[in-house]
Length: 267
Image 1 (cartoon, rainbow, N blue to C red):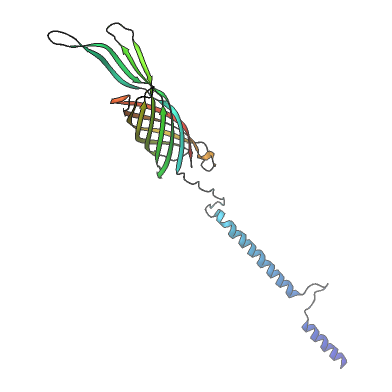
Image 2 (image 1 turned 45 degrees about the horizontal axis):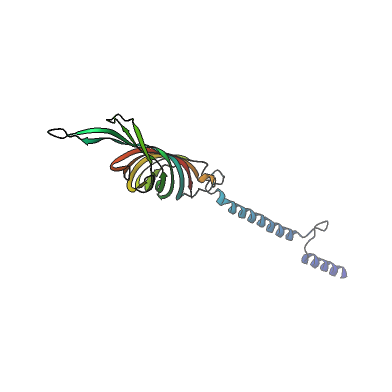
């Protein structure tokens, strides 16, 4: 009887307890539970890393992150220097009435040739992009050309002489530009503005108008993504100008060319 009870008790204890592995290892089913949790954690971590990394490769099938597109510039500041060309204003004769009988006539005393000479020119500009490749620029320029009158062919045999006077010339104008894209890019433009000239003693000041058109070339010093250097450009241009009024052109129009070059900074 006692042997059977002990056997029964042993059977109940063996049923109620988990079987231990040889060598005192942990029970079998807790091991499976820990392994399952660990596997789930590893899978979740991998998925999280994959989701975080996905946006960096979303736009590049090759798996390389794309560089951000530079923001299009809207404003440009330019400082330029160059040469304002000379303008030939024509020749005239100084006439004198004669006392011819029975009718009076005219005779030439001497001839004059008037020229506005070439001079250095400085100019500052502010440009604004108004639509894609179309820009509008406002500019102000300053120059000091010589106004020269050459006197020749004097009837009394006097030697030829040239009288000169220094003019102070300032302009303010507006122009429309069409610019092609690229690191090395051409552009064309046209516009007009206000002209003011003062004589040497600054006692006479006259106003006039200027009209112009031309073409130029811009070269960006570095790729657009290179920060400050990517916003600096060297530009050069040539323009054909027509001037009217002021001191030098009171009755006619003068035509000349100017050549400019300098630096531009886009903002």
